[in-house]
Amino acid sequence: MADSQVKALIFDVFGTVVDWRSSIIKHGKNFGRIHGLEADWDAFADAWRGKYGPFMNKVRTGELPWTNLDALHRMALEEVLDEFKITGISDEAKAEFNLAWHDLKPWPDSVPGLYRLKARHIIAPMSNGNIALMTNMAKNGGLPWDCILGAEVAKHYKPDPESYLTAVQLLGLEPHQVMMVAAHQGDLLSASKVGLNMAFVPRPLERGPGRTPDPTPDPSFNYVATDFVDLALQLNG
View (cartoon, rainbow, N blue to C red):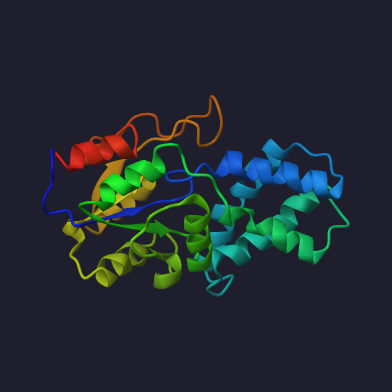
């Protein structure tokens, strides 16, 4: 059913819009070929992503000052390289490898679905990724955002309420006019606490085959869709 009150859709990006895991594995294998390294790049990608939450928590708790996600990814990379006993890599090569997060492949439905959603709604990322990261990812992946929003603008990482509310404010809207779209139920429920609508689009392969997260949708979700094209059909009537 179409909801005429919803004017804008804001999206979680890592896992919801793009397939971060397969992309980082691909970049890892390429990094290994260039530098003559043997490693379990699937495990490497999981370990690197596994640092995401803990490093953001260092910002939330004040252990680190506000630090954007590029810098947090770079700090995490040092730890993961050490854990995998990979040494002798120059800082320049590490910095280049860190840019892998700027080049993540969208899920097959993401670009066509976003174009359909864009026809009637403002669409923007609501990601913990910084503006440069989100902009480059959009250019590399053909993501047709109307604007770039997210944690760096608010200087708060999700699920801090300020992250969602800053996006709403900058769009000149009220919370009930904005819908959060995500494959992660906790992200949606956090957005709901400050008055946003919720659309759940599960991505069963985000963490690899047989590791499906969030299997059962919370009954409070306003929409549950199989992909972005399905969400556009539901929203646009």
